[in-house]
Image (cartoon, rainbow, N blue to C red):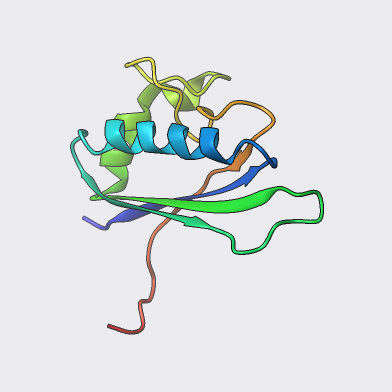
Length: 113
């Protein structure tokens, strides 16, 4: 089984940083209780965009794509991205006007220690 990294870029309007960070913490708490969860890392840009927004990057590593699919299950099948446990997944759990661009990746190379 090959690990899968879900990497979301998140654009957070000025003044919504605390809310975005709280939503992310709630989701990591939920994800960490699911089978196949490996880890999560959260990054915040050091610099604001011209409009005052901040960019974040959130990564969640799953043991396999099958584990990831189990957690999001129905989220692929509806506009709200809601899974069978009522959680909005695939980046759809953040309130507007926060913009999330989700993606799933497999590692092809890792350099360093």
